Length: 263
Length: 194
Image (cartoon, rainbow over all chains, first blue to last red; front, top):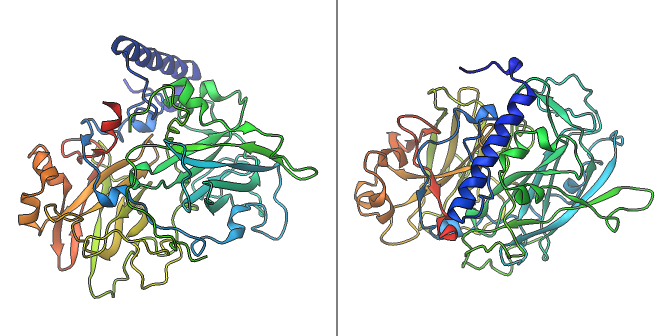
């Protein structure tokens, strides 16, 4: 029954995606319910989900005080230069220099202040430094692809990096991931913890990618796509993208001490 | 907080952590929330399994818990560890055999009528959205028995939430993403869908 990945074609995977999206659409229309924002954990087109999704329904839990708080991060945890991925080595990395900036907000639009944002990505050729990445594209001795920043009082973050390349993976034959940057966020409550991926506008691989398409709500998918912002671009230097992030869910009533950040 | 479709601030969706986080998310001392020589140090360890019962070699586990008196900790230094301060947050990738191994302290309960636990978060390739669970302590028999949340969990599945006392100062908490003894995973957001 299980088709080996090398025999699984894009057409077969795309048909699976279309069918699952249609089923979710019907489920939402029939029940007058919104489509789920987060991807279902059981998503056949992304083959690795098969043995890694729970089959029981999640058990509802009222968050306790610890879950309504997040670890305190500050500038003592992250050096300022960690937000610029292009200055971590002696030379300039190859590729298109970009600035990615935005704000991390809660569901009421309030800034998520003094929280940790972490990113990792492939280089301009679509190659990760990770030792398990076997894609025969060149490593760049001047690019590692890891960055961190602490959000400001307005929830803002700004990262300077290189636009990552698309890369192949072995989910099915001729499978390619659209260019993306992995992002990790902490909210004001641990229940708002989020790891996700940011994409670039107009990528022709969007429709084909089982990971991007694992989000069944088209409007939610679009929220992962940064927009080009000419006001962020800097003359003679870098192309600018803006991407805002919203972390909803149960909120903290526990107030961070005023002096929590001893930077 | 209900989220209406008209709301301007809509949740950003999750995507898998993927396979290549190993050079980015782990950090020095991430597994050492309290140094092993801390007088109150405990070991919290286990294996992450998939639905075929095979260990998962590419998951990453985070823990978050209050101090020994049940108070939320607001100390900086989770990423830049000083070797002494217990911040309550830990992160470690599993090894090739799916094992994770934290050194920390045993937290207190945040409420007088609740049992103490460690919040555990699991990320992995093939997991489109992280999973939350709680590791309660096997030697807290009385407190576990009177905990309202544990009481509400199907008794046949309740043991999956209990870290077993496997050696002095050591607790074992295996995580099964799927299968017969599938771990109870938690939904804290259910309210927002009502």
